[in-house]
Length: 294
Length: 312
Ligand SMILES: Nc1nc2c(ncn2[C@@H]2O[C@H](COP(=O)(O)OP(=O)(O)OP(=O)(O)O)[C@@H](O)[C@H]2O)c(=O)[nH]1
Ligand SMILES: Nc1nc2c(ncn2[C@@H]2O[C@H](COP(=O)(O)OP(=O)(O)OP(=O)(O)O)[C@@H](O)[C@H]2O)c(=O)[nH]1
Ligand SMILES: [Mg+2]
Ligand SMILES: [Mg+2]
Image (cartoon, rainbow over all chains, first blue to last red):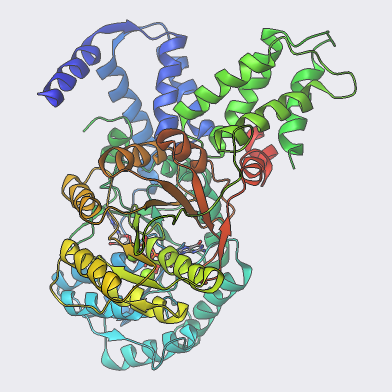
């Protein structure tokens, strides 16, 4: 009953016409800020809106829908699928990101998707650092039917493992090789250097590898996401993003600022903890989600 | 420390004539800059508004002390307000860290969103209690969701030199919690740290499960573990965990990153629970005490605040 009341209340305010004045625009800006767009991006977008629609009589529904379209237009250029070329045997995807953002789980999800497409897929348990990280990926590998290249002993060199795994995958004719890495903060130079080493070592076997470098970004992350993306991009040439944990209450609005300031493609959204919970990033859906429209 | 915000504010005040006291409009101009700075530091909007209101009240009518610039003065007012909001200032008894003042075995419950650092922090706390306070600690993982979560805690326990509850395949969280408490009572442990699976604030079933674990074990501390990089959603997360589970303290992880950590303020404002510890690395000794003034400085000044503000 409570939610019905709230819904009705929401709908009545949604449909009441109101002049789009300074106050209304400020509220819109605040909605965007509360969704993590950041002050700069929120202002930019609302200012654009002010120029075209200021003073008009509109319902909240209309105004939000129009704003969502505007944001969708900003996101559209970055909403691109991750290109996979199985003929490379293997197409190597290196998955990188800050600690706990969802790298290992996203690999499991991708593994399941590519398996369903009939591709041969293998995982590399390149997080040789964190406790039980290898076992975590191994369990996923079993669940989604992907073999896992694991280090011979804990703490082994991740680059060495990646090299051996790529070599073996080439011999086996594997079509997609998904490489997990240890989580690392972008401001830790030594750890970022280790990541570069993995890239260098892969290139010795295939100068074009890794063919994709996927950065996982937790949707709950605030403005620091900009820094994360910039540094990872600079250090290891990130080719695209997966925004994880969008099934929560966080809206991931920083992606809009990212689209404007960094311009990296956004390939996927993670919407749960199971292997099936990965979706393509859709600009329009995402933008409507930011404004609380469905 | 606060040079960036100060110079920005100096810009605002330069346009004004020196007067005896700060007028409402001087203060409003300055507070607009403060608002941006706080939002860029990821302090949640409702919390920013509350803070700005408090600062406005204090700043308006303040005599500008001749030796200090108005900008510095506003920064100081803001900083003091932040420190207070974070739990420092007057009324702060200076006591930090966990409260384990209860009959043994003292249960401690770790809760939070997925990947926030619960398991690692559980092991860090265990190591600290073992080495600094010579307490006998039992670690138990109630995480039957994430693959190899129980193994992760077992391996970390070994590194920390403490015991972890033997893993029984197929056992549910409530049963594990009961067994942990039982073992702890029989084997005379001082502290039992219960690690739980990550859960979303909006996941009714899992939140109810956490509440059930809490009701069954009656933890003396329930720690909400949050990532220092958390954005505006901090308020929703904090509210949900406070309402549905109840928290007695906050641990903020990944302060070794370069996020400004405004979430600390949001979490504290919403839950009223003190921030007890900070996670500052992946290693088990990377656990730090919380200092309100340091986090306040970080929120206001650390990092590249000038360029962030200028872009706005
Ligand atoms: N709700 C939700 N949880 C997710 C999602 N993706 C990952 N998770 C959870 O987030 C937590 C961390 O995920 P991992 O895949 O282990 O993250 P990681 O980046 O590999 O972590 P590290 O290797 O420790 O840096 C786990 O509890 C996952 O189940 C998602 O899309 N939604
Ligand atoms: N840099 C840094 N990394 C941390 C810190 N605390 C935890 N981590 C890392 O963050 C990742 C996730 O930590 P976990 O302890 O597994 O997080 P969790 O909350 O138990 O995750 P779930 O059980 O999946 O919900 C791991 O890679 C940890 O090593 C910290 O203070 N600093
Ligand atoms: Mg991982
Ligand atoms: Mg855990």
